[in-house]
Image (cartoon, rainbow, N blue to C red):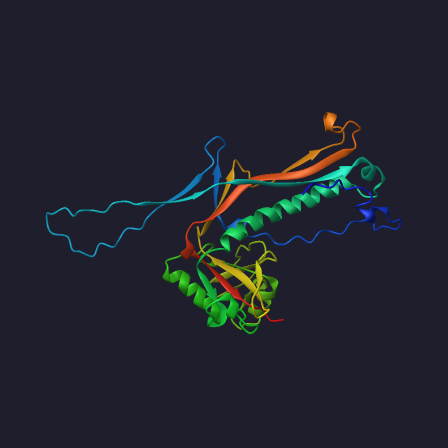
Amino acid sequence: MATTTQTIGVLTAENKTFYERTLLKRLVPNLVFAKYGQKKPVPAHEGGTVNFRRFGALSPATTALTEGVTPDGSNLTIETVTATPQQYGDFVQISDQLDLVGIDPVLTETAELLGEAAALTVDTLVRNVVCAGTNVQYAGGKASRAAITASDVMTASEIRKAVKTLRSANAKPADGGFFIGIVSPDVAADLMTDSLWQDVSKYNGGEAIVKGEIGKLCGVRFVESTNVPTYTNANSVTVYGCMIVGRDAYGVVDLEQGSTPRLIVKPFGSGGTSDPLDQRATAGYKLFMTAVRLQETAMIRLECAATA
């Protein structure tokens, strides 16, 4: 679809005589999915495919040694997971008339909006990969997302069950001996009603608090984000896809820090012969990255409803 130049006619709010001159702060979600991935920076000119490599575990030696006899020994195995970074970006085109007549610094505000959109792009790309994992637990003992009802909300019992699944698979905690839980505000509200819930405001011992952290329960430190995926099932129930992750459960790949969005502003007069009257400026962002699930058993997606 062709990009439409944003003119005064499009941004009609700019024409209002009594326009609120102080623009409202944008409400940006707490972006957490990219934060907990294993980072893999890759130099330029090193090919388009990235390999995450890990050594396979050795079996226990349960056979007693025979005096004077050297055992056969074990062979090392290497497991490889590949990922291919891709490029993403967006831009906005601004007319010179809008820039001259508009009450607000349009180009500056546009750049801020694009920065926020770029951050959300990174977090959503990682989220989409992580939340597509095959290790799933459905609240209330249900067998599928379609069977979840409005009463199948998040509880301490569900968290204990999920942590047991992770520990049984030898998943390692991610942060200070805790797994990380990523939940929406709606699900967090249900967790906070549990008598075992430990609110972040009541932590003792000078613990470091991560951004967005709201509390602890059953060996999991929870962070809150409105970027958690939701689904509507056949029962018309909103189902939340919450994640509990351990160490090195997934990876985030960038090409020479390409996952850090680059903001690109082309001012009026930079378009050459394609813009002979200097009528257009653009602001945009570009990034180059991907995410990959490394160990399915080191994370679990816990699907549940939330109290209305």
